[in-house]
Length: 283
Ligand SMILES: [Zn+2]
Image 1 (cartoon, protein in one colour):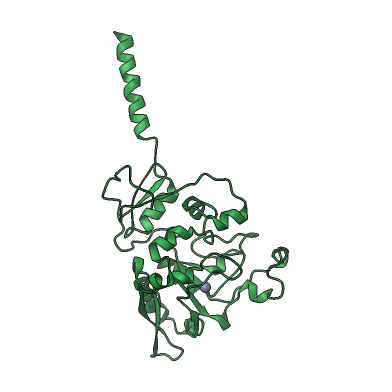
Image 2 (cartoon, rainbow, N blue to C red):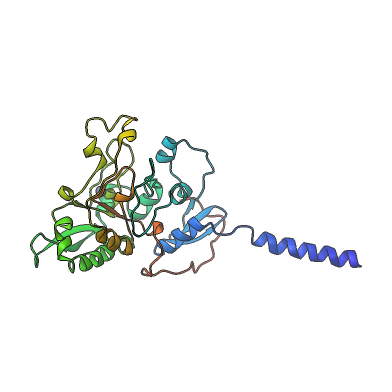
């Protein structure tokens, strides 16, 4: 009898244990928190989208650096390099560009997989013009409220007159194009990125313009920045990461990547409400 009870206890222990065997990885939780309009839940290595489709989280493949860039899964996207939020800004480590391993499938599904579909979500944001009191319209996606977050950035920037020269005469926002020298789409393609004043910024390819395609250019790359860090602090607080925190620096560049930043109380943030239904097709 005692053995029988013991067996029952072991059975229940194993049952409870097995139910807890699939915890949500921290990277997944950050995705769920960052994109509540689109993502519903996680189970068995799949992210469940609110439209009912599934996306594999970790493809479990061992990748060279080149392969990781060309076939980034969501797990690489979240874990390859951790973006360092906040100030002060340290000189980035050799070849460290946190946030640049982007899962293209994820962005295309969320923001549009063609120029026409990405463009169809663009809405205007009232931005700062060079002269105080004047404004300019710029266009970003309305998905995930990116326009509202960028509008909130503008409302803060306008209260700091000394920052105006850096954030006016901007380089641009939406532009459906691959990243220079690659097959991968730039985040500008999805209407989630903005380049500030190019004449007040540093970009590694401009500093090494004759030889940036050589592998050896990295040896001589010397990070530099002249953008006031107050601007970085404001953008990050609204969900945008900064290209100035990359070894391959691009100090004019900000992109909406809330999954890389500590979660602020962004709109509609909440836990998944619906249990995933098993057996659906991969999206
Ligand atoms: Zn850019």
